[in-house]
Length: 218
Image 1 (cartoon, one colour):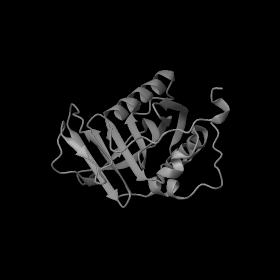
Image 2: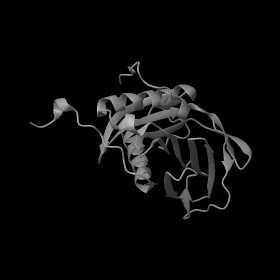
Image 3: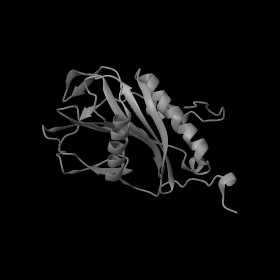
Image 4: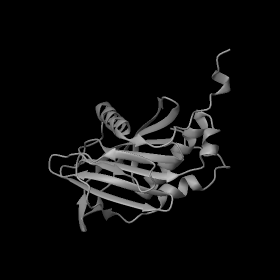
């Protein structure tokens, strides 16, 4: 997958998702209840995992994240950062995908992770980038206690809605590092992260994709 970045890109896209935000426990939120982000840019129902759902969240300035964690490696994470929506709306789909690739590379580098598969996805009025990413063992804080997460395969989706850029993560199996994932795991991650996307209620209109003039019908 090509990773060439245009030289004119402004720094807001790379900085926003790279900032390390301190997680905190979310009080008063139970499975089945709505979670609304502090910036009011989206809402989602807290998932009900079989062995309980832990919730972490953080917000700082124009970005933040919320993470839903279950006892058996269940994980759904939503990261978001405010962007220049006018500049994004003026881009064609190819240029926007380059932006998404750079954001994904930034996160992968920061977490010493590895992209195992990646492909663009199309949705109504939007461009998305999907990747299956392997994250290494890492510390994880839940309710003030620190534990270790084993190697983790996650489906990741990068997209822009309204005035925000989002990265969605869903655990895609392989929690205990059972070798390289095959096509089924790539597909499982894609299905999981698209289901998460369908559960989010975004405030504001999606940013349209500018038609590529070379492909416009005559």
